[in-house]
Length: 400
Image (cartoon, rainbow, N blue to C red; front, side, top):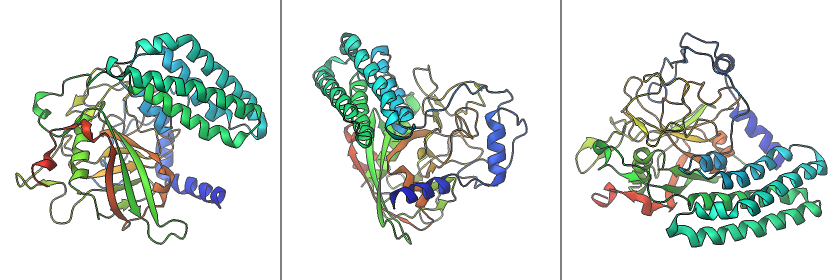
């Protein structure tokens, strides 16, 4: 049954050891000052994660929804559209109230969003990129109609129809926000400018054949890659996807904390570019909230930026990032991992991952199934379904 399955997935996704759980809780209140040792593979994680020497005040629950994280990560500054977005996202919390009583709270959310859209429409329109204005206006019209439809759903007391309509409306909001981005917002440093770069976003579907599971055989994970905040990392991955590098590869680690793959057969631990015969490595790439371009080649801890907030945090179940060697910030190549975690235990920017590993995307559909993956499950294919035109300097076109 779906309900029972969902409960089991949550238990699997939260399967920390007592040691990890205790450390995570201590991290969340800034109590640990001596780096702990987990004994993880050096390729995926350092053996001695660095802990800030300051306490961190957690001001509220972290944003865990991958769609919301991606919306807030866009390089825009338009208060009017955010005032529409926030109450629509708050519907998720409103629905946590049992029964139809939740609909009263949802109705307040919808009225707030509708009022914000009406009052802020001109400011939203003025924020659209000129080349995308027509599409943005059309999407705003769909959003207005959708809000009216959601109001009728509430009046009919149809609680089950609220969440699907909320998702639809937030997708419209995200589309409008993406239409506010006018070109690529900064120059990639010259030393990386000739590498495959994703100057924008792309969406890929990863199909995995899951063994020994009576409930599911094939699962398609939809992943949104964010080149606005990680163009080198995302571009490298899309380039490898187009080379079919990951097709037929097995899941190589699945321990209840991460799922990892990308280590090819043979002695090499990363991608060997056939055009050069050498390993392709990419730099550590971290975008800090408030900065206009990513930081390259150094962790935030190494820079002393203990309080800095990363634009793409390890908040969502299914956060996607690059694995690398422990003592080499610029050693990432092809190995990727997806984090299975609870954000309350390891809050953003007071954990052992943010600012140390390049996050470049989130699983946005079927992420719960990541907890079902096991070592030996096979990636049948990864395919780009949108955004390939944002890839520049594609090396796969040189040597297929």
